[in-house]
Length: 492
Image (cartoon, rainbow, N blue to C red):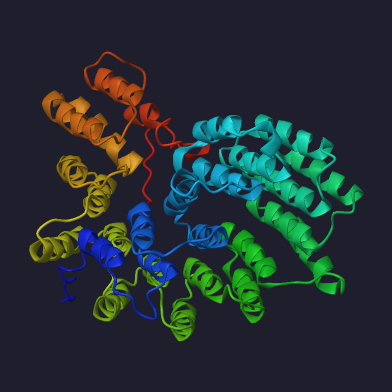
């Protein structure tokens, strides 16, 4: 039986320990922020507590914290620190700070809010970095025409440098690849060749473009040229990108060859993140032995971080190795005193993904028995399992639990939540639908406009639509993320 997660590992106690850590040689602000691995933990109380203890934080330290959080994809926490810089410390934001905040707002709050922030920035502060961040935001949301307008402005700017412009070209390359703009992609690559933008980074972006569009022949031709060109520096990313291309088209034998090459070129401080990436790629091609081998390498790099455990559990789930995942979970439970709700979440998802709903229920039951109350995100994962296997009555019941136990600033998984709303509407269970939507409104999960539309929808006042389409704006869902009518979205 899996060891039970100790009751002290709840969200509130974790936050309190972070705020009231005694002053020790390892008690640095960076240490406190790093330990707040759960992305829902707010950064502002941690920063304010540090100041109340009579300590100070300089501009460069805050920039470093934001950079580290972005690297770990803890975007909401990074944005909180960015806003604290100006709101609480009244620090003057450099253009790089503004560009970073713009990018984070796009990731956390959506494109409209990012554009609104950009428009609020004084004209004198809108340099190449800020416009480049706006380009990233438009590209993230597949807004091709607006991205092209910004790119045109960047090309015309006299203040840009070649390296910055190359980065912007890379953003456009990915956008064209992702949105299937083949003619524009070819024209852009031709333009880059004419401008002699053919360094290692550019060529890797071209490889990525070929990989995304499944143009394996051109990808292989370009790689072959790069391998014999001694002026080109190949690194782990070069072969990792090629592996993605092979994985996408199911050529796993070729993917294995280039993954081995990628592994031989791993260097520098980012080793842990690279090895975590390799875990998921080896799992994608079904190489369980390599997954465990990389896992042991990760553990040798000054221990395994929570993010590494998450990558390993996800990899074992993809390999249908639930026994192995349970062993890794036990190891995490016995060796970590700082709770990270994402790890139980991944385990619940692993059970559900593999059709083990009884095991998922039993695991959630053990957690509930020990802690008395569970984070809404765990209930949300279990609800997704019921949705995936068409037990919609249980999905609705569990989604209600998720909403009631949800933390501030959280939203339920849109595809499951939308399916639950549709199910209640079909069953004409208006009372329950209004109760759940009312709770969502009280907790601020949705905008007033979306709430009003959902109410009208369940009352039958809006036709020829579904709940997911009504949630699109609040979740910043792109068209390419929306399933076709009747199609289920299974993964989280």
